[in-house]
Image 1 (cartoon, rainbow over the protein chains, first blue to last red):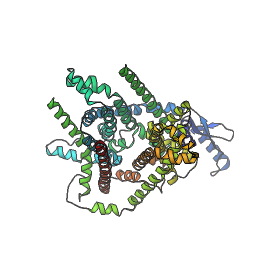
Image 2 (tube, rainbow over the protein chains, first blue to last red):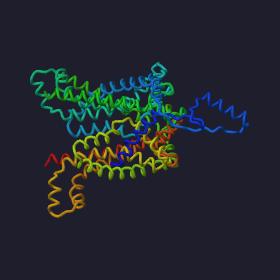
Image 3 (cartoon, chains in turn orange, cyan):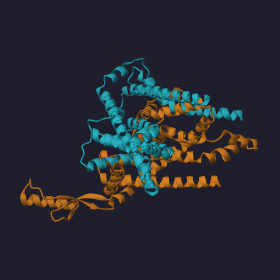
Image 4 (cartoon, rainbow over the protein chains, first blue to last red):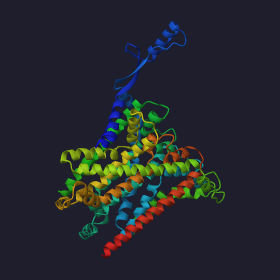
Length: 296
Length: 263
């Protein structure tokens, strides 16, 4: 219990604390000094006491909403991240759904093998997987070379938003297939047969039986792809170059990069976290409603 | 009807090609004599021998294993204790605690990483093994709880009472009844912790110190450089190891299933 308090709650509180505070410089009387006042103070001291004299300056942490407001300046980046992650999630769903359905209708042994094949790339370090795409997408990379053979290209593929989306889809596709599969494998084959016996065509079977029954899998698949995709900073850095900054890159820059400003970074993390938790509670409530509807 | 089916098959084959082509390109390149990643100049094993003699990679591999093992053992013990504690709580507080413990699973990794980094800075700890292991423990514990909880729920409460009636004290009940009952959950939790710990990059990235680079961190710094064919060799090795592990696990699984069916 204590463990959880220390390592889950305290860090989150710290984020909130950092997000709402900032460090300011004050003089001996506790007056806050901005950059101008600071310069003035230094000059005054230099005139009075000579070159080496240092005025007394203190640091103090104050409560502020400035960080949260400053985050709004980066709103476009946040929206860009959400947009790319959304596209990636939709593509994952379109790619993954038929695959999951096919696997779930196979013989048990085959299901196991196919599922293993889906999981295998996921077990590789994701940096290596992303690195593989760098090799393929480069300007002198493999895809451009193959296209060159048939007289096309070279195309600019790396360092585009498309490359970032591709990296997201590639890395998180197994996260979409596995929950879909685990829901679909529970659909009784006889339910589908019953629908067919009652005269439903394959399209009707899909829309009236399979898709409604797989909604929980769709919901958890969407969250499992969207959450890591929206907060990634590696994929965008490796495949997006410097031009496709996502919110994750910004947070990283505030903590470990050049733009060192943990307070702003914490504010960004807080906004991101609140946004994602809100999304999750919305999807969860949709899920519950559907479950109730299905039961009725 | 039949045509539709084969269409799905082709579609699946394409998706699998999409999943595997990049990996095969990496593996092929690991045997490529040329430093360039796109021109094939001949077969070589040089990158493998370079890899084996690369001190940084070897030491970071060792670090990864140490951290994974230490963190998983600690997380398994803590997580099991926490699960039992939560199980014995009243419904309302159990709900609240479960939600809190699931928070790191829902939170984006970067937020968890950053928050732990702030915590360690706040406590003025030196970044290194200790911070790294603590960070890994903290994201592994929820997985252990998640695996042990269902086993506890399945357990028959009467078993404990029966043991007590037969003269067991609290500790004996715990050791002889509770532990054997929830052991499968504990083992799965441990294995999941090891896997996540080895695979983790984001949280390590925010909490590692100069002395405690893990393999992920080393790979990251290698991919930042323009040309590093050793990375290809490394991915080929990792691919083969992962493939072997998964094959063994799955074959054992299928065999067990067949036995059950026969019975």
